[in-house]
Image (cartoon, rainbow, N blue to C red; front, side):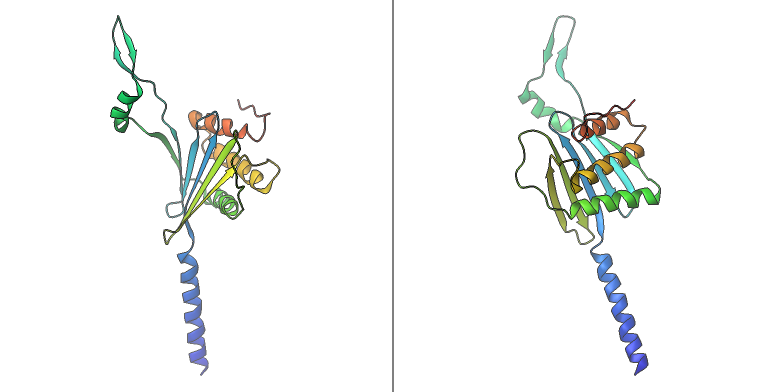
Length: 190
């Protein structure tokens, strides 16, 4: 009888551990989108423990260049070539496990907070998408969070961590700094 109880208990533990693993966060995507600056995206992949950052690709186009003319491309011409243009610049790091866990923990806590209902006319939007191993997605948008609120503190901490992880990528650093300004006007990064 004790053996049967032990086997049942052991099976229960194995099944409950398997269920917990089933709903673990597999991917987290954090997008910081300020009103007057380019946005940037950070993607945490729990399988590979990599963090991939991307910013929109910046380009200017002219459809002809010669010694006599410089004609800017119009929007209809742009649509015809858009699929051939680069979409974004990507950066990838595989940080120390503790840094990955810290950032993941912050973003998971942020994903559990309630969001405000109405977007302001101006400010910054933070988009957060989580996906578990069952491919169930959760999406949230935080509109111009107050720096003293719980969500504001978590967002600021996220900026601090990713700024350290990607400290050698000047284009991304610039995008992070422009987002940080919405929470603190006294940001000067040299």
